[in-house]
Length: 355
Image (tube, rainbow, N blue to C red; front, side, top):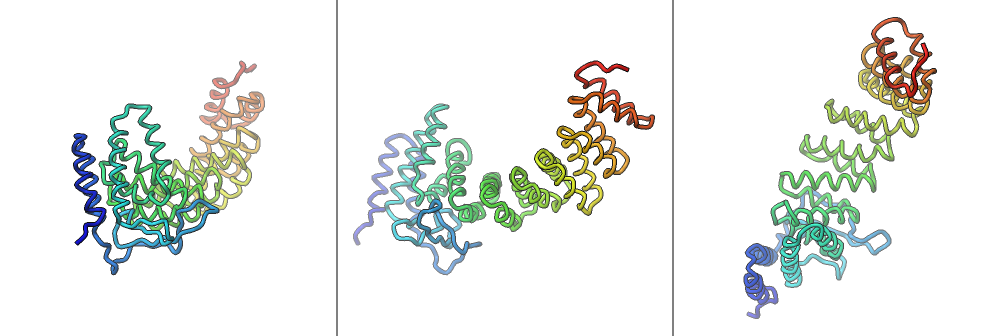
């Protein structure tokens, strides 16, 4: 029987790589050549399949992608003629080339190494992104191999986040998978926050899911504060959730404090509502200390959280209007809060106060 081009290439490739003294490159090339000969069972089905996904940039012709039985990235095939991930000799040769390029990149010192990695990621043809990702994931997830795999994933996620999401879902559990999941979540959030959040909510692992939603919410806070806050308040209480709420409230209050305050007053949970209002009032004081002070006095329950808000407002108010801040504090009843606020004014005032 006539040998296929793949089998003719294998011994030539082995001699070439071994002559260079690189056991890693030889192992990679042979392993991938053998793996790619194996047929994909037609009866198997993927864990998840998108209704329609594309690899082309917006405006370019679309290609339908359908995951096959294999859980590797290269197993996702493209139906459009001329763009394919078939397991042929051509792909094996490209894998051999990638192994040689990895060897060269590994031997390069910084900062030239980073430049080579960026160039390699940018030069991989769109139709090879999945196969290249799969190839470099076969290496230990550190150094150039990990950087290349992550860069290829981020590039794919910008072009087609749904296909990228399928690829990372099928990765083995571990640090590499968690990093990849969050990379796709961040990029997808910048493209479509709703779809990104819907995807993350389907993650089966609770810890990964909560971490992913926090990641999406942080991205959303820059452009969609209501969406970010809605995600945050649905999370179970934790230090990470509280930090997210604090960040989102500050972001929102910096651009639209009145809207932020009105929305926060509708939060059903009293403790959470007070936390959000405290952060908004403190941030608002930079723009309008009178409005911030009014919010703190009228909407926050008396006690520690209100006291913290008042001290924060005074600290900002005194920077622009020491007299106004002083006049407000002097109307406080005698006690620890009045004393703390006055000490803050004396310490932070840009010029000495006249008693």
